[in-house]
Image 1 (cartoon, rainbow, N blue to C red):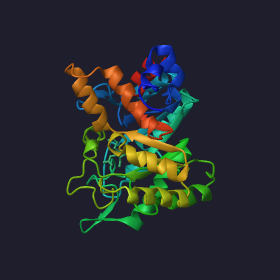
Image 2 (image 1 turned 60 degrees about the horizontal axis):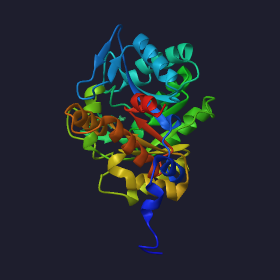
Image 3 (image 1 turned 30 degrees about the vertical axis):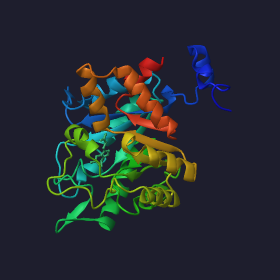
Image 4 (image 1 turned 120 degrees about the vertical axis):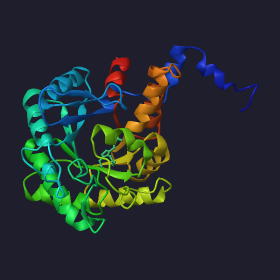
Amino acid sequence: MQFPQYRMRRLRKNETLRRLVRETTLSVDDLIYPLFAIEGAGIRNEISSMPGCYQLSVENLVEEVKKVQSLEIPAVLLFGLPAAKDEAASGAYDENGIVQKAVRALKASVPGILVITDVCLCEYTSHGHCGVIKDGEVLNDVTLELLAKTALSHAEAGADIVAPSDMMDGRVSAIRSQLDEEGFADTPIMAYSAKHASSFYGPFREAAESAPSFGDRRSYQMDPANGNEAVREAALDIEEGADIVMVKPALAALDLIWRIKQEFGYPTAAYNVSGEYSMVKAAASKGWLDEKKAVLELLTGVKRAGADMILTYHAKDAARWLK
Ligand code: PBG
């Protein structure tokens, strides 16, 4: 039926009607808050390109996660900044490494909240790449062993979910078999499946002090131009045993969230990354955007695209606004 018989505006007349026909609901249950744990004591460094986000030493991290839990956010994602870096990324799989210590402290002091750990080497390597380097190349298969060791050490510390973000081939199955062999068959893997080599990770690299010292990540992260390849990446991760697949970034890859959710029907996460956060914060600080409206619209858009959960630095604000 067409105008004038049918008028779309009839159902937009007032907020009660709009509520009734609203298709997508953003909830605090959908949110995961990323945090940066740093070696040391008494540290709370604001990240200049990510206002409102901090590098936190473990005792401050615990206080922060208590606040996150009081907002009813179900999960945090942990990144680590070690005291020292080397070629072998030994801080990544040290049982007394920064993430391992942070996980143990959180499990002891803030039980209940889910602790997801990012599994990657770039924060721990002296060169800032996500794998072992030989002759200027990032080696795939050698890196798998270190990633599996890292994931195992996180699980041993008490991590609820491990999340490999390195984009090496075969890492999900390497991690799955290591966890299974060592008695962690019940620890889920959230795989960064479709991860573009994106310019929007810039602020994160300041936060995590993990920018590569030479070259870039384009030999392992995906070309942002590719969508079919993203679907194949997700298919492989699922075959290898991923429990949750992730698309990253979120706002620049809404189509991939949609495609991967439609194709597999798997629990699908979207990472609203650092640069996407910083853009909104910068515009809002200049008064160019209404921050609350912009954030809720963007996060709702990510859900409408098919995400079941959203990793976002806006999580605390969004949780407050959704109350
Ligand atoms: C580690 C990792 C990165 C992010 C998550 N895990 C950085 C990168 O790949 O360079 C980016 C997160 C963000 O930008 O918020 N490999």
